[in-house]
Length: 266
Ligand SMILES: C[S@@+](CC[C@H](N)C(=O)[O-])C[C@H]1O[C@@H](n2cnc3c(N)ncnc32)[C@H](O)[C@@H]1O
Image (tube, rainbow, N blue to C red; front, side, top):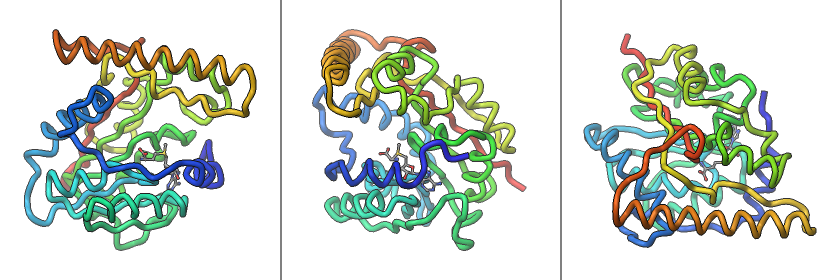
């Protein structure tokens, strides 16, 4: 069911430096994607701002978003991840941001009992597409939600150009993704008993999501050079969007898919 596995993720985090928490006030072009996600969260989470609300990030390894959810919306925050180094890095990012939160090192499919049916928001970013059975994973994630709570899921759009380039640049990484369209992601959430409130392709372009990491060699050098060039194209498009007009997110070019779904109230 798990297309990547715990050892894969642990190695990913061991090889990566800790980064800073998301900061939507950072106006640099390189922060465009975070600012656009921030706009979405303000719309969805802004109305939920109330004392005592709880948010869980599933697959929180090295999460840059958990401190943001605490500081901007006041959520009590919890993260769960089965990669110990990813958990340590998530804790380090919280500590650097001086934000309180709980990081639990566990398999999200074997949840600690006290976490079930207890969250107002369950958020995951680049996690659910790593399991063969997307609706079974969505159902497992939804077990953490209280009735009426919402699940926000973001995945890379592997059925668009980003997916094709990922396959060419690094096919083993491409292979650990379920290839989902927005409609299929929504259907998986519905099959899990959730009510889909919105499902969209998100952002005009971001070629920076392509993961080139692979053994050193000529092909790697070429792939890095091409992806580096495409990342500059993305930045040029973002500059245009910030100065002139927003461009539509399309199934072909959008780098992400977002699904927002609600657990029915009983
Ligand atoms: C692509 S990373 C996303 C990390 C983080 N959300 C981010 O945006 O940087 C996927 C994360 O999901 C975690 N993960 C995958 N399967 C898991 C499972 N069954 N239980 C807990 N964590 C899992 C991995 O360890 C990894 O940290």
